[in-house]
Length: 196
Image (cartoon, rainbow, N blue to C red; front, side):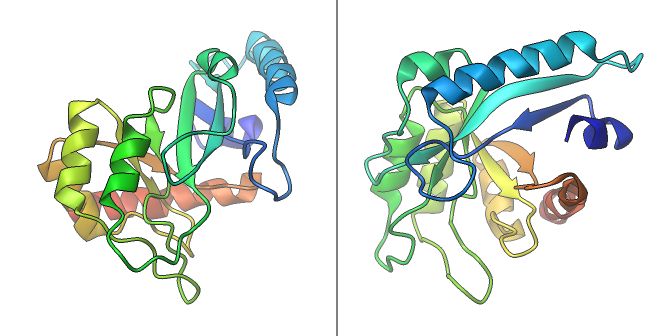
């Protein structure tokens, strides 16, 4: 992933494996996260590209409906970035504003990832009082993600526009599961440009 990011002239890349509570492939616990952090440190020490580049230690933290994560705060404190994401109860039709506000108030996260949890032709995603959610994110200096994975494209340009109006930070991500998927950044960037 680092080599592919360098080829794309990135200045940094965040490795955000799924945290232990999400029962899918690639989830890691606190011990594995610490080992990964050492590997990333070693990699950063050996990168001699002649350019400014850094691999960031991070994780995709699994958030429950109360906005609580599934990893210890101590293990998260050593990371550069914590992406907090909902991975359950994503088909609810009632307003989820309280859930989002709780997540944003979680002191361990900096970015709310794939906020609506939508996937085309599979899941509509959650609804909320988005101006209120984005206003809270702005007050807490938290970012919301534009996930450029083609099936997600979450947030949509209309919600990105609303987030920007509320003064909310925006994070561009790819949800990449392999080097070839880093190209999905173009979709994130495109969404941001459409919202400008």
